Structure formats: C-alpha cells, structure tokens
Amino acid sequence: MWRKVCTCEFGTAKLMKSRHGIAVVAVAVLWISAVDLCARDGSKDWIVLNNCRLITNPANDGDSFHVSVGPNEYLFRLYFVDAPETDEMTPRRLVDQAKYFAITVPQAIEVGRAAKEFTRQKLSGSFTVFTHMSDAMGQSRLERFYAFVQTSEGDLGEQLARNGLARNYGFKAVPPGLKNSRLEIQKLQQFEDEARQEKIGGWGINVGRLNTRAPSPIAFSVFASEQKPQPPATRPAHSTVPASPKPTPSTPIPATTPAGPNKSHAKAKTPLGRVDINTATEKELTTVPGIGHVMAARIIAARPFRSADDLKRVSGIGDKKYAQIRPYFQ
Image (tube, rainbow, N blue to C red; front, side, top):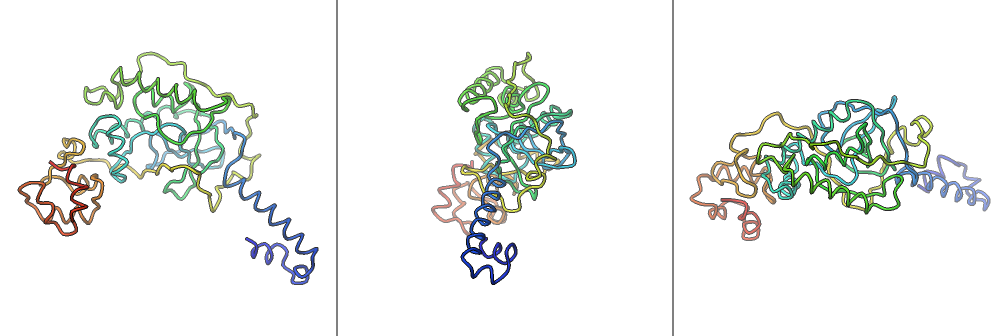
C-alpha cells in the first residue's frame, strides 16, 4: 500500500524527500486505508435495496442466491438460517445437516432442493434486501454478502424455518430495527419447533410431508430500518464488489455448486452413516468424512469385502484412518 501510493498517487522523488511531502503521503495513506476498510468490512448502517429481483442461476439454493438491483448483480447469503445442500459436493456439511434433521444424506439433499424451489417461488416477485455488505465468503467469482430478505410475506429466513426447510444456524447480526439478535434467534427456534411438531419439510420427509407447508399464515416480522432506503446508484462504493474482500471474523458458510439432476437408487436407500462397503457408489463413499475421490476409487477396486473390517487392507487406510471411517460402514 505504501509503495503504491508513493509511486502512483504522489509520484515525484522531490516531494518524497521533503517533510511536507512525507506528511501529505501519510495523510493520503490513512485516508485510502479508511475507505478500503469501509468497502471491505461493510457499512455500519443498513443498506436497503428495494425492487430486487431473483436472477436464475444454477448455483442458487435455499439460502444463497443471485439478485439484480437495477443494472447491478449481487450474490446474497441469508443471516441466521442454513438450508441443506443441493448436491454431494460438501459431504461433511451434508452429514451434519442430515444428523440435525435426523434423516439420511440423500434425504437432506432432497430437503435442500425443496428449499431452493421454495425460495425461488417466494422471490418470484420484487423483494427488499437489508445488508451491511459483510463478506459471506463462498466459491463464486462474485463476492457474496450476508443479508436479510423481505418478501411480501415477511422475512425469507423465518419462512424457511417455519416450513422445515432450514435450521436455526448460521452467521448472526442484529436485525434492522432491533437492539439485539436474541429475539430473532428465539423466534426462529419457535418456528423450527413448530415445523418439527407438525412434521413438515425436513422434519416430515420420512412420512411424505416434505412439501407440506405451514397450515396457516404466520405473522412474520418485517424489519424496520431507521435509515431511508437508498438505491445502489447513490452508493458507488457498492455498485461493484471489492477486489480483495476481508473475511468476517466468524466461520464462513461455504457456497454450493449446481445440483446434479439425478442420484443413484442405491444411494437413496442408504441410511445416514451406514454405507454398504460392497455396493456404495463413488459419490456415496465420498460422503463419509475422511474419504475423498481417490480413496473411494481404491475401495471400489479392492472389492469384494467379507466385511467392513477388511478396509484395513485398502492402500492408504491405516489404523487412524480406519478408526475414523469404520463407524460409517455396515
């Protein structure tokens, strides 16, 4: 930063040799640093984006999606909630999500795809986004930001939780108009408990109620920001995403990749954590923590096995690896 400012912004050797020149450079560096931090850490005030539209993108899912605001495109990730993944690209996360809903990994993917469709329907019209432009990380070329999304029916995250399509889990922030996040966490937990009791969404997939919706309209909260809505054009700092984002000080939630159209019949019947060592597909094997595509290929090549205890004879599976993966096989 120092070198860039000295050569590009104030680049004369004579100025750099004088005390006055050094002072000017120091002030300029501090100013540029402040602007840079503001752009990368996000505004302290809520930025309100009205008349937003969902952009169709294969990478969209229940809690992360592309949005257009006038001529600008953004990628937003919901605060507070986590919808299951829509494919097998993040196996450890899928296992965790499946355990949360007490379902199988293939079923968790079904819930994730149902959440994606639910969000697509709820965002079929215009909606409002509240954001600090805080970096939500992710794998897309477009920087992803955390946000609250308000539809004509209320907060999208609350609707997902109430219909059993997302868990009360994720990066937290004080919602606009509230003094702390505790009330929102409690509300989401209440919605989640009601969905579990009614066996809808992910909580009801085992009884055929994945696509059953909450029986009556819920008075979802509508956050009220004291800041007047401002269109993106009035905030040029956010019209394009920063080139070098600064990670937020919390565990990021990975972005998902496009969902595959089909899944194997064998995988659909495999219970969570109990993989058949002789019939599991390569993708199914990679859902086991500690097994990548290379190891999965070695396991398949070493078949048939008399039992999962024979995993020790696969190249690369020592005592430590065996102890890690053995509980996932039947």
